[in-house]
Length: 389
Image (cartoon, rainbow, N blue to C red):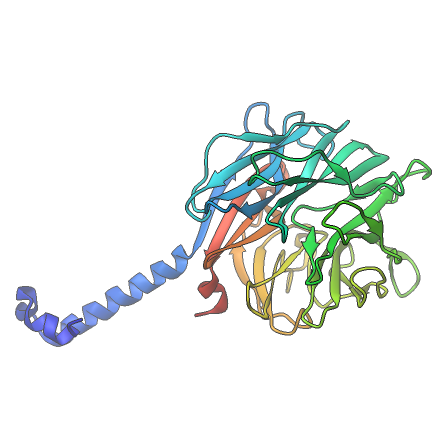
């Protein structure tokens, strides 16, 4: 390519002004374009606002199909905006890496629960099949995750298999929480809050993992169950756990709390036994974090409401939405980068997907005082932007 000096010499306009001015104009335009490019690297798409007879859309997950499209399955509420309102699972599709999406719903699972079906996890299995996990919520005493499998790229699905059969109860499995370890074990982290034998629900929660070594055909409960406890012995609210495999083979579990930070636990035997939960240095409200490893890289990426420096009433708010990297498997985290910071925003229940060189996030993005869980937004950005390249 010709150098700038050569272009100036051969441009009629260039002969009409000093070359130094042209250099200055070039630099101004270059920096302006660079600034616009950085801003454009974070793309926001309010994909699913509420509408008539559809007061809430939330808690979905992605899977990339073999034809290159991205499928997003979410909880489409029809009977109200509460967690117990009627809902079914619906899908939208993108053929441009998540920048734009189809406008019409495709029903994936009709409401088969007494209350609803909600909180989707999608996972590509080693066989090439796709696993679809979600909560089938029958009542306040029976809310348990189930798993279906598609062998034809999400066109049809198998009958559901119950993940929890040993004890009926009200279990919470967040969206985008089912993971597969390097050994092929499936892990399903849940919080138990009620059973038919309880006198009243225990919303402070008991955590456990269910795991499967046969691709979801059968499941068993972890030997450990976890409660959050303060130093004085009082309970810490412990809810909505997530898990990820570390580079040394251990499993990290994190859970939201009302103590100002997520609590952490580790397993050295694939999720069967766990250390006692302890507080982390991450500042967060009572809101779930999401953690995944960058594809083919050592860094962990966390998306959460970073409350570093937040004080007063704002410590209860699920804003801002931030992203950060860890280079030491979650021991420490780099300073976060802000993705959304409306002070009235309500950012939570994030699903993560890596498509080519971009990161896709699907998350709630409503207004705190107007039904914060009602809106699903797709936020995406370049990996290079995240890595500071």
